[in-house]
Each structure stands twice: as structure tokens, then as C-alpha cells.
Image (cartoon, rainbow, N blue to C red; front, side, top):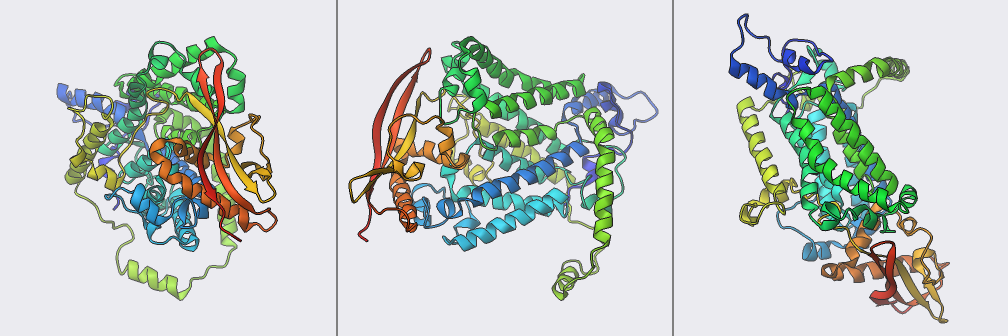
Amino acid sequence: MEVPLQSFVQPQGQASASDDASAALLPAPAPVVPRPLARIGAVLRRPFMLDLRALALMRMAVAAIILVDLAIRSTDLEAHYTNLGVLPLHVLFERAWNPYQFSLHTMSGLWEVQALLFALAAALAVGLLLGWRTRWMTLGSWLLLVSLQNRNPLIAQGGDDLLRMLLFWGLFLPWGRVWAKDARELPAPAHYSCFGVATAAFVVQVALVYVCTAFLKNAPEWTTEGTAIYYALSLDQVLMPAGRLLYPHYELMRWLTHFTYYTELLLPILLFMPVATNTCRLLFVLVLFGFHAGISLTLFVGLFFLISFAALLGLLPTPAMNWLEARLGPAVQLGAAHLARWREQLPVWQTPLQVELRLALHPRVPQHRHFRLLPALRDTVLLVLLGYVVWWNLDGIVTPRYGMGEPLRWFGYLFRTDQHWGMFAPAVFKDDGWYILEGSTRDGRLLDLYRGGRRVSYAKPASIMALHKNDRWRKYSENYLFVDNDWMRAYYCNYMLRVWHDNPKNPPLTHLNVVYMKEVSLPHYRVQGPSREVLCGCDAPPR
């Protein structure tokens, strides 16, 4: 499944730090003056040329994020992925399943099976991080990530779409060509610039994330009033400490709203500049690094900012990578030398099973032979995929007449190229509040299971965000509020009741109410509420 390097890396030349040097990275021209069309083609390629080292950084960052994501998800293995949790398999298939989707995680509702799949996904991510059998590790990581996300769509967030698409396009990108174990078996590239349909698709995908979310933000609070960030920071469920410092400054938030909107709308233009390409791309990366860092400090967005960082790493231009390599390269090489000496001290041995597997998988086959798709066929398929993704993203932006019809969406559902970048779009939620798990004991006390069994208090907590174990639970609690999802409420109520009774130290309950203390954000720091709303109630079975 290795993609031919010749289709990505230009055969001759050295990388240059100047913006105009990208033309020198193209194949060496004949000793005659290039024709005008060839010159135009060389210029038009520049925005889509990527650095192999930047792609390698993105590969390692994506693999590390997968490991972090698995670690966070594993703390809720039973709650989110088994039949004893909040979404049993029969409920998933009845209420939240798309018939075109697949999931290996639905083969069993036992936590032991889920743990094995988590361990397999972690092993594949480690292989991807090291760049060992990179294409196969990418394919395996993508399959298991899609499977995991399909198992519980009630805890999915926008960052999951981006992580999934980075792995999808990574199947076709040469992100294991350098700084990977696979690269040791290949000759060093003549230079680090690469170009192809896959690199163009990746650049367009990154641009779509920001342009589409800007077009979807069509409410007055984004386009004219400038109050969107005020309302976002009024949501105590996602408010971080830095957001509390910013919240009193109303005019500053108004300015930041307009800055956010026009940054998302206009900044991606820099990705397609055929002149001063390296400078424009570096500016794009630096601005968005700061942009996502600011979001992560003010709003609780889970891993979304880290996934965005990973995508931006793949766009770092060659001069920036030269600068990084000159300063970080010696330290990395020293660490690699120490690691190599340490490995030499370890005993070298193989089990018979390892020897048999190696002979079975590589029987008298030269080490560097890989299955390769025909370049023309591969590029055609990638162009069709890119067009499909762009068309999908027009949903909600163009009139339904020009949008993608439902009969054509099966491919997006099956391969999970479906995506929607409606972060705080078209408007920011005004409804806010906090949960109380109001448990009634046999002696008439009311205990709050959400706060470790303390006496129920309807006063607003100091930090509502701190009540959520992680962003997966925060997203689940958000989906829990929607009327269309009222079917999920009883399963959560009974799950929390069972977990409470599993601890013999807890006093037995007779009834549990899931209470939401609703507040509505109003302009100029005014709040309506709070009002007590009982979303669900369940009786404890007799003991």
C-alpha cells in the first residue's frame, strides 16, 4: 500500500529558505526556456507543496493524540462502550445507528472485548508514531478510530471529525518517508519538498475547516452584533480560568468576536497564495497556533486544540523546518544515539512464532518491494474523493438545491468522510446550567450523586466545568438536554443508580432524579433563572 515516492518528491534540487525557491524544487527543466504553460503550472503547484519533515511531525502528533484519546476514553470503558453503560448495543442499533456504518466495537458488549480493541488501537498508534509499516499502521489506526467513534456517537465532538480526516488523508500522504523506521530502508530523499493530489487534498481539507465554520456562523451575534464570544464565555459548562479573566471586558470580547469570524473566513486565503508561499503559510500556521491556544485557555474543548495543532504541523514550510531541524536536530540525534547504545545492551532473541510469522509474511520477497497503485488511477480516485469532500462541506452553506442529496451520502457514512464544522454555529447556545443527581434515601434525605453523595444544594457551584470528569462526559451531558435525545435519559439515570449501589458504603436509594438547573444568558451580563427542571426519574429496584 506504499504510495510511490516519485509522485510526491521532486527528483532533483535542494530546499531553499526563500519563497521563490519552490520553483527550483520542481524537476530540472530542459536547457531551453520553459514554455509559459510550464511556468504557470510550476507556480500553481507551490501552494500544495509540503515538506516531508512537516508531514512526519504531523504523523507523530496524530499518533500521540490517538494514544491520549484512548487513555481518556479507557477511564470510561464500561460507561461508554459496554452493555452495562449508558448506551447498550441494542439501544445503539435502535436509536443512534446509521446502516452504512461499521464498528468492530459492536461485536460484544463486554468490557474485556473493548479493552482488547483499545490495546490493539494503542499498539497500532505506537507503530504509527515510530513510522514502522507506516501505511499499514495508518490504515489500522483509521479503521479502529472509525470503529470507536461509531460505537458511541453521543460523546463525539468536532475534533473527532478532524482527527479522523487526518488519518484518512494520511493513507495517501508520504508521512513515513523521513523520521520513521521505514525510512531507514530507503535512500535519503534528494530534498524534502513533495507534491501530489494527496498534498493538495490535505491543504484543501485544512482550509475547509475554517472557511466552512465561518460561513455557518451566520447569526447576527457573529456577523454584526459581535456578542458571540460574550455568549460563549457565559456558558459555565465550558468556561476555563482564563475565560473568567476575559469575561468582564465586554468591548474586548466584541473585538475578539469579529477577529475570530474574519480570521476563520479570510485567513485560509493564505494557503493558496502562489507568491511568497512560504511566508504566507508560516503566517497562517502561527496565527492559528495562537488562535487555538487562546481557545484552549478560555473554553473547555477537549482535544480539539491539540488535533488542530497536529494539522498545522503538516503545513510548516521548508524554511521553518530547516530552522527547527538546525536547533533541535543535534539534541534528537544525541538522544537517538543513547537509545541505540541502550538497545545494544538488550538480549536479542525471537520466539518461534515471530520467526514463522516473518517467513510467512515475507517469503523470499525483497525487503523494499511493496504493493503500489497505478499513479494515474490513484490520482483520479483522490481527485474524486476531494471533490466529494468539498461538496459535502457545502451542506448548510449553499441552498439545498445544490447540496449533496441523501442517496449520495452513503460513501461518507461508510468511510466516515462526513464532516461538519459548525463550532458555535450558526449561533452560540444561550441555555446554560448544571446537573444535580437528586437521590432520595429511605430516611428522607436528598443526596447529590454528582458531588459524591453530599446533601443536595441548588446553589450554583463555583466551577460547573469541574463537575465533568472529561470532555466526553461534558458532550454527553450536552446531548442529554436535547428533546430529540430524551430516549437516552433513562439509561443514564439507571446507570448512575447502579454505580451508586455497587459501592456498599453508599446508603441505599429509593429514587433518583436527573435535575437540570437551567439558566439563560441574556445581553449585558444578565441571566434568567435558574429554574429546576427534572429531566428523568427512575426507581431503585427492591433490595
